[in-house]
Image (cartoon, rainbow, N blue to C red):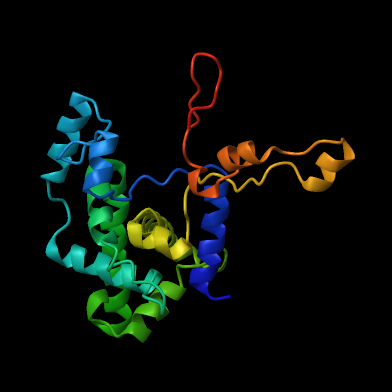
Length: 234
């Protein structure tokens, strides 16, 4: 099992336990049915809408920091044979939004990228994004495993832990990430009625008319309707 498969297995377990993934973008028909507004701010109060629009219009990271985030995204979760990379899924933009929305992340993220550049300059005499992939991985290997990291790398460890969490959150709440997980959401179970052996044990059997009405798998998502006399009408 590779790294991506390990992550997927952990996340599928989280979803089964009740994790709600809400970053999927529905198509136009789904938006209309759900009542989502054209500005993409479904389910928000007026105050929350104003806040979100303000945050989306702001800028925090400079060009160098944006480039560094993109490099880190690709190193943390690169493309595989079956799915695109974190950059392909728009994770750098997600992280940029989160940094503006949750301002307590700003200092750790900016400071962490400064730490990376300082470490890269000390080791390889150039900024982190200018280093080769092998050199970049050498630096990240010193901070990716907290239990093995040196005390003087504490800032880098905290930064990389935060960045890794943001990358995985951004990716696996995107359409691409959810498709990669194979997550289908809640779907009705297939039910074929009480087994024949159990019915026979009690001297019972289904009437063909009711089988046609109640055991039609093509209609299993249809909500039953009854008339005033209690008769099934659909």
